Length: 358
Image (cartoon, rainbow, N blue to C red; front, top):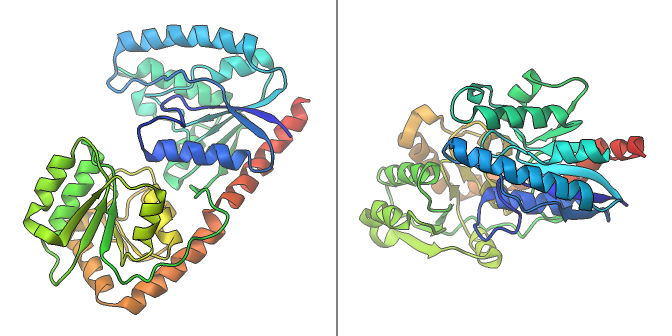
């Protein structure tokens, strides 16, 4: 069994701030170590520039220089592999390639993106560093077809690009939902894309006829704005706040549908969770989102709230259809989006690197 150094430039897996990025990092560490290999967080240094600040980037580079030297000196001698999760222009991996070169360790990446449009402008230096880090990787695992486009176009040398679909940290599916309760929305209440999804959801609900009910699980700094959007619907909408795993699973166990437009979601872990419980999903047909959804009728972005409400109206009026789509979704999750599959895909591609490095 091998010792693996794991690094996340943007956010550590044990960050107190909930996010899909944090969740996937945790899942990846668990999946990589599922065969008995030792996965250790290599560094807690956060390399993240949200706004394109040249002074911040310079300061982060200086911190990275010191951290690289520390890791070259202190990384355990039996470290056999370095894995970096989510290298991109705002959060480039300034550590892994240099440490691996100095210590002769294989280097791989998970969920990396190449943003050639950012090679000019305020993030130019960081974008170039992210590209260089991609070039250094012997294997890059991609989660969605959208990520593959630029990775394939900019592939470096004999580098391997391997699909690793987003997955749940489960070996077995949870119980199937009865699909006969309120609708469910699960989403952090943050400004930006999350708030845009909530705005689109409110516009959709305003067009939805009949006697419906919606539970919303989530919290955050934009909660007051979300509550104001939902105020016209009165008791039809119930705010549950941030829910732990058990509370969320109880909601999945009875929800009729999961409704979340998915504005600019990378893919969305909640879609996987809902489908694992046999809940049909109402979302827009967007890049990334479509990679984790069972093939079905998802309204286009151009269809707006009218497209979402039409799909909701169809599903809410037909329990048998909800159960059928839910069962189909469970089959797809079991086949493609569970931890044993992810573990197998990862080590099939990586284990030969460890043997070659000996």
